[in-house]
Image 1: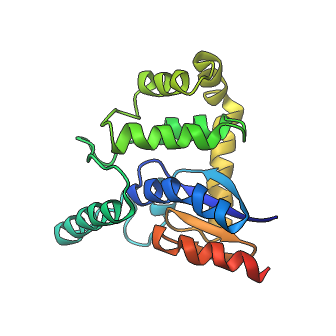
Image 2: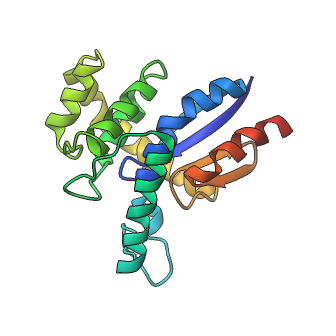
Length: 197
């Protein structure tokens, strides 16, 4: 079967939308999704003359993005309740997703996105992540210990470096063979491109 890499950051509402959509669309296309959690902050810091780990967009652009997310979620029928704190730090969630097995990484990732963008729960708080793990039937304490182990932390750094090596500069990104597609609105194009391999 063809496959697609789905690179996502938990702070990104566009990654949230892609996460909600990719499972069904990929199944319909007969494509396997390889969920690739990472953090975009270190990549944003590489921008020349703008060494911030956040987007830091001007007010008009921030307002546009917010409304664009609202319109898109409404169009897709995806729930949205803007977090009272935005963006929230997704580092811990990314570490847990990276430590997860392929069998439940998708389920955990979707639960974290919904906790943040629908339920307004603080995903930067370990208590929230532990609760999410329990909600999806995982041994929360064991998983969190594995996620916080030095080897897993180093693996996340390696994952960010892998993203940089693949010229990934934003989230969500989709990689199909040597081709990179950036943005939730390129998901369908990326899935279609799997047929070119």
